[in-house]
Image: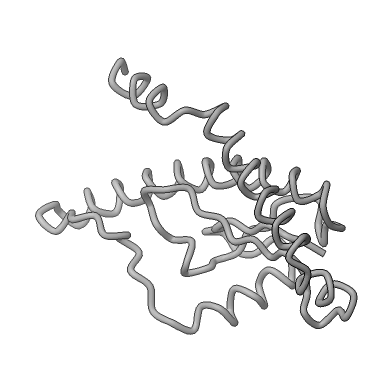
Length: 150
């Protein structure tokens, strides 16, 4: 089945998510995500990063829900809800990040589907439509305008 994952700072939402995150996190990550905050005090750095990461996690969950809905029309869903775990590759504090598991290679029927160009195209289209719908419903410029008025 298909699954969509986002970052969790508070542990994984399932044993599978925890196992997968531990397996994939074998490389070091840069939690700062390329943002230069070296001139700020330690407390300010931690606060800015925490606020940014929390907002990004919320956006990532919304994005993941859009993509998961689209994937559900193509393939059986491993879990009907977005899963969360501490994936190092999802720790960018400045952009929504999701990890999509399209199918299991260990399942012969799903492996056969993954070898099909038509299925690959349908999966890519489903992910694209989910992303497109997310940004259509949550335009970045509108968020920037709201931030400036506060």
